[in-house]
Length: 187
Image (spheres, rainbow, N blue to C red):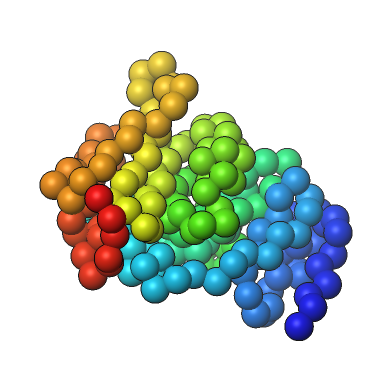
């Protein structure tokens, strides 16, 4: 089956176009991009992360949402695996209002984009305090956490089932053993 995607769109046209469509799409610099389907490992890691985060964050302050829209630039709308947004957004919103944390689980075809383009876009968001990337084929994470001087030039790399990812701004402790529960991942 061939899918013919529009070549260029504005954000409002994209939001209208994508509603009710099957499949996953993003708008990257005005260009519609079809996202690949997720593997079982990807889905399990996203579910585990969602559950761990939901159990630690105050729902009166924060909303943890999977695959929710994110305004990532003048002509870019992304759909990260997980967005932590300030609580209180309207039910009809299609994008996060004040994202404080974004998490992506790498797929074989998205690694360069997640660690490159998306990192560059996300780290410019004024409300963002952390960007987390998790590998799906090995127990490894990359964390950008905003400090007093902003984000460091590169991420902290955390690897091993005995490690815990700490996101101080949200008082989150994310044990890699819990995030990779049920997933066959290499060291």
